[in-house]
Amino acid sequence: MNILILGGGGREHALAWAVMQNPKCDRLIVAPGNAGIAAIAECASLDIENGAQMVECAETNSIDLVIVGPEAPLASGVADDFRAAGFKVFGPSREAARLEASKRFTKEVCDAAGVPTAAWARFTQAAPAKAYIRERGAPIVVKADGLAAGKGVIVALSTAEAEAVVDDMLGGAFGAAGAEVVIEEFMEGEEASFFVLCDGTDALPVGTAQDHKRVGEGDTGPNTGGMGAYSPAPVLNESVAARTMEEIIRPTLAEMVRRGTPCQGVLYAGLMIENGAPRLVEYNVRFGDPECQVLMMRLGAQALDLMQAAAEGRLSEAQVNWAGDHALTVVVAAKGYPGDHERGSPIAGLDGLVGDSRQMVFHAGTSRTEHGIVSAGGRVLNATARGASLQEARDAAYALVDRIDWPGGMYRRDIGWRALGREAPGGVAQAPRP
Ligand code: AMP
Ligand code: GLY
Image 1 (tube, rainbow, N blue to C red):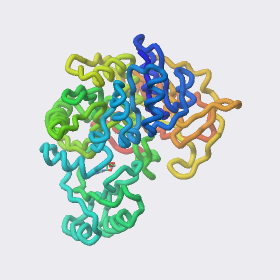
Image 2: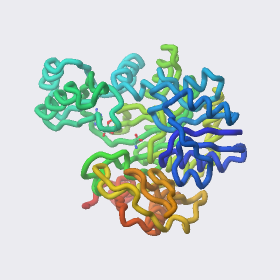
Image 3: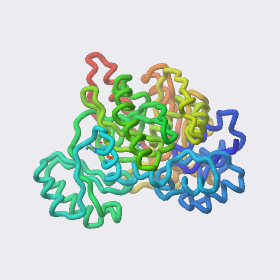
Image 4: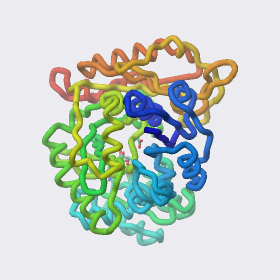
């Protein structure tokens, strides 16, 4: 098979790495890719949101399967362009991608499908939004309706803060994404992510994970795209997973079918779990980054068979073979991230690292120059390892980090604290002191 992957982050390096292990894969092209991907596949420097350019690339290279990594091309309808040109695609239509691209759309689907989620209301005018905030009280969550690069959600601790956020958003701080705001009840509980592949009607769980969104140890400092992840997430035990399928995933997919816009690709449910009951925080229609890195580490070559089955509507025949192990990834980011940070700083120590089915440094923002690998983004590397226990996976991942020689980089030393804390005597996870 000739395969085309869209994207160029750590998620796409992990996807490429898993796909390349499958003997079915004859040729792999990744657009635009990065320095790590270039070591295992062909990279094509193309605009992945330009449907015509992407279809032309697929035609020229006789592509059999397209795998779309990030949300932006999905939200702009690139999967529809591929399908219209007769290509098999793993990734939802633009209409189904609204499950990620519009918070209001998702809330409406949840209400129609009876999916448990936070109570909500939507506003385009500040006065009624503020009246609603005062009526509901704080804490309360204010969200820009559209895609805002992970920055469009504010958990406000006071009504004054929430009202100020409403002014900001409706005042244009998030452009068109904030022309409408969704205001939600604050949900208590523990967050975890649940990933399923779907083919329109069927859904197949492919793993659970927990992310570390804050930049600093002890979950402090500003939000980021994610500083590390592990899989599985202990809080998402078998009973919570079964409830998530029955109460959240299946009703959502059925509602999407009812609307004539079935969902195909990844459905990534961000959940809030309280006393064993899951509620939906949000949907994404792509793998998480860095969650994909730990999922791919655990799935390996079968990931391609599963994504192909989803693209071909054959998921009811598919099954996942689990090794029953754990995986953990540590993100190494440029100092200063998520604020201003340097690009182009040299990274040594990577060439000597062995990547195999148990450990791999996935590249995110890197590029290769005549002086070797240099940083080219905020999140730069993902040291990823698997082990028989989470502790073993974590030790192996940090051993990889120790071998990377990059003075311009920084990382959290406490990835996995929540899950490891559960295993400790007493079983209550405490955020470690920075
Ligand atoms: P979202 O982009 O919708 O996932 O929101 C980003 C983060 O904000 C989530 O991962 C949660 O930590 C938090 N969050 C969003 N909505 C709520 C809610 N209704 N209650 C509590 N926390 C929330
Ligand atoms: N790591 C969170 C996300 O990809 O949305």
